[in-house]
Image (tube, rainbow, N blue to C red; front, side, top):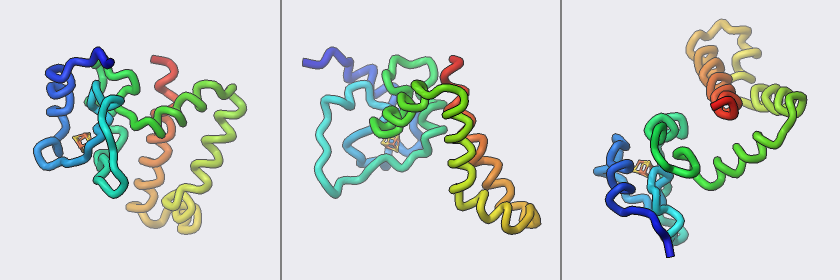
Length: 132
Ligand code: SF4
């Protein structure tokens, strides 16, 4: 039996700008999400992880607004040492489609360069989380 509060869960989920239109049965901002069911084909959360994490700040959400899959990746990240993390960041930056284009274009396209920078920042936010 879960001890989550439906009222508290609703209060956090309502902070999502898409809440009124959203029909995803599993919400990463739901304190009771482990008690919900998901059927194949049902919609999934479409809000960016960084936005969910910002909404989740200061709440009791155990996975900080991340999906189970994102949380598992974060846990793996936490268990890596510094060298493994640097290698992972270098790899992620290397495989990012924006950063591939970025180096191919040698930063001549400012739009793609900005997307690459955003991608690096997003990867960096994951690494920053361990310090908090
Ligand atoms: S599932 Fe995603 S889009 Fe829907 S309310 Fe929750 S955070 Fe917002």
